[in-house]
Length: 339
Ligand SMILES: [Zn+2]
Image (cartoon, rainbow, N blue to C red):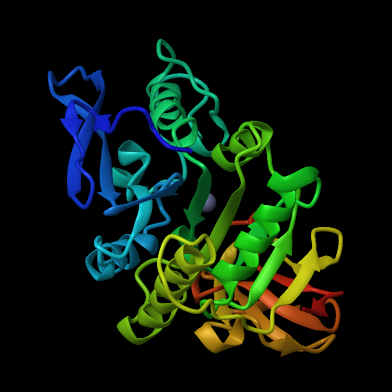
């Protein structure tokens, strides 16, 4: 897609330039204007537009530092096309370190608020702006999530297997290219039509959803996930022909939504996790292997063991800490193939 205009948020983005703009979204009760932070990186050469979103869920900050590094590393003279990058898509949820925004109404999960509404709740207004500028103005979309609150850690790239035609095939290739940056896992799962990536796919815009990293991790661990994100991002740009170079291709563990099993605690408590390292995700586990224990924080007794329900590959885990009942503990791909 060649855009007719490169004026974004009132700022003209010249070929070969980098502009940071804040797109106005609404005037708040405090009197301050709230906006959408948008980094526009336009290459010197013509090419496609790739939009990238993070912190759609406010407790998932891992991509922020990766974006800082990647955007600093890109040589705009070598870039074909443009990047539209939003590091914090839902600033209100982000400020609360919460999955959802604190609107005094329904529709508080930006993840499921698309296509949005210009006159709706604050969350819907953010969805509307993101749709108009980042989805309808793009050829490709990457939605970046991560682990976050209550110690969640993740490592995979999601793609929707039900999308037919070129958009489906291109999305699958994008997922493999991103996961070849080091994450190494691709999860095939139907996307919600009310998510940004699901909405994009319905418009035949290829899209993937990345789930890499966590929050407040030790620096050595954070850096490993960050490298997965940076290298995945850059490898995707090479794959899409936006940067020169040779595309990296890792051996990918590919698994479907139906081929997964979980180990979840039956009551709230303090989780003592056995799977907290970067290297634990993407690694094989055996049926019955101890993944964690639940400590009753009041009686100080271990009340439950969480064991792998099957042989497989661990792709979702938790760090140790307080853990509420009803949330997911550990997830294992039970049937998978190497591609
Ligand atoms: Zn998320």
